[in-house]
Structure formats: structure tokens, C-alpha cells
Image (cartoon, rainbow, N blue to C red):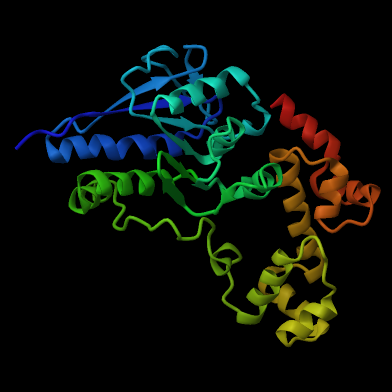
Length: 320
């Protein structure tokens, strides 16, 4: 039997990349080589300036190839994390386009999908991104097919939402190329007994996130999450779930140790914080998107909630 040709994978490390999503993408290939007793995959690390790159946890990795040593690369995966929204590097985008023109497949973990989009490489492709960045991505690229799935493999493009979704995506890739048995063996090496399908939810279910199983309370929370721009009052929410305002207030105090109004405000402010950190929307646009009827009221609420103004929050993002 002819041995399969070794596939050569590049990882482009972007400063402050997610170490977990990077390692979760790399390790299944190591396991596939070990279990198959064949060199199915070979990997190389790249950085934009050919210097070590620090992950978001502070740990550095060093490139083993220079930026122009890509002639034999089959797939280049961009690994990113926090701070990606600030990157508008024309040289990087042109480098990615050159790889694509040569037929090199492209991948992205976590927020790196944003860089592929800015390089104009995601037209007519399904793609995904970390849940924190989905809304701001759609704001910047409303024409793209952002699915919000755990991962997407569409033609010559593969993207994933980050974290352990990288492991699922790479195991799925191994299954496509070398069979399901090897892919499951790789997953089991990492005590990952099931390779999750792409359409599983990125976020934890509400009952686990808020530590409650009360069905009507969960319906209230879902309604609040779905109406952070066009705000519902408590009477409207109560009518939809069959609770009086008084019953709702007692339920929130007993289950969540807060009030419905305070919980709703926290949801809106958390959404505002995500948009401030992950989008290019103006502060006025963010205020409107989070249900505040004036920028001054939004600023007062945000300052009370986080101890700094929206403008200071955005400036802190740039400094960090």
C-alpha cells in the first residue's frame, strides 16, 4: 500500500493569539501521526516579523520558518485571539491573498476569521467566529455568510470559533482525509469522547450559565437576551411567559439574587462592552443597539456598571 503524502500545515501566530485554540488545532495532527504510524501531517510556525509571538496568556512561541518560506505549504491556519479587531495590515492581507491564489487552503481559529474577511477571502464561503465577535463581524461584513457554528469547512476555507472547537474541526478534517476510526482515536487521546458536529452551540446552555432549571425564568432570560435593542418592559415580558411582575421579581430574587430590571440592565451593558471591545461601531450606535435612548444615559449606566466610561473602555482596549 502506498503511503499517503504528508500534508504540510502552517500556523500563522497573531500577537495575543489563543493558546488553547492553537494547541487544540495542532495536537490532533500529532496524534494522527502517532496512531497511524505514518507522517500524515507536518506543521510549521510563522509570524509576521519572523520573531517570537506571545499568546494572550503571555507564553511565547517561536517561528521555525520565515514569512516567505511557504512554497510547500498545503494549508495555512491563522491563529488569533484578543485584539484582532485593531489589525488592518495590508501587507498581511496581500500575503494571505497570494497564498489563496496559489491554491493554498486557508484556516482561521477564534477571531482570525475577521482577518480572512478583511483580506476579502470569505466571499461566497460559509464561515464562523467566536460568539463574542459574531455580532461585530456581521456589522462589518453584512454580506458574508457568518453561521455562528462551532466550525465550518467550505471548499478551500476552514474556520472555527476557537477553544476546543479547534479540536473538533481538526478531527473532522482527519476523518475526511483518513477515516472516522483514526479521527475518533485522536479524539480519545485527549479524553474527548465525541467529535462534536459543527452545528452544536458555542455557548453553554442557559440553565448551566445561570445555575437554574426554572422553565419560566429561563424563558424570561431568553426574552431579555433577544430584546437588548428594543427593550421590553416587565409587564410585556410577564404576559409572554405567564408571570405577574411581582411573581417575576420574587423569582429573580430567589433564584438569581437580583431584580429583573438589574439583570436586564447587566445583559445590555455586557453586550455594550462586547461591542466596544470587538467592533468599530460608534458609541452612539452602540448605545442605540443596546436599548439606550441617549448617549449620556448610556454613559452614566456604563460608568456605574464598570467604573469607566464607554470612551475610556475603548481607549483601554487600544492600550492593552
